[in-house]
Length: 294
Image (cartoon, rainbow, N blue to C red; front, side, top):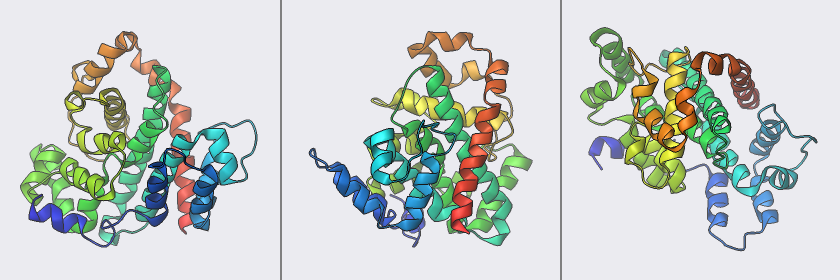
């Protein structure tokens, strides 16, 4: 780990995973896990509990009955799915409004892109009838956590990253390496390791730019990366520096088409139209977290 990365992830915000998320992950290591213990741990954080119940009752999950407790949410949504939502919401909320005034606009773009990537990844997974226990959604929310760390660490320098992207045709990774000596995927990998995140989520964060290099979770990583690129194309980007995109030539799309040949025939224009409602869900999700943060 380089000195720069060490300094980046040892800032107060990134040194530790939010406590409830840590406790829940520790409980998951027990093969005889008691969901009542999980409920009790989560409910020690009233703000997080409120957010989780709002998310569980949101259009994202379209449950038939109203969910009024964490225990009921676990039974209705499933333990693994709820744990992934706990991870995503607790991490997402922690940094949502914690930002410098100089980069308010950048952060707003960042959170909108993250929310949209999660929603599109969820929709794409449904399109191929592949379900990743909500990791595709949470992976979409957190895939650029390394970029967030870099913005939090030195917001003024990160504005220079965008300057290189806009004026010198750099990609985000090229600009980050020139200015920071590292890039957001490497920073994300180190944060994932520090926080001891599950392997599938860690793979999304550290390898989303190169899904073919992932062994066990290639399809998951490819779904998130495809969603990431689609959001850039559809105006919900965060400034990656992509100039021209031919989806069929992208590594992630090739990985997916190999496993799901029917994707090669998908009409992206129709798919975009179908996702219009999904984008509204992304905005609703973001609003849930912002309401509780204020």
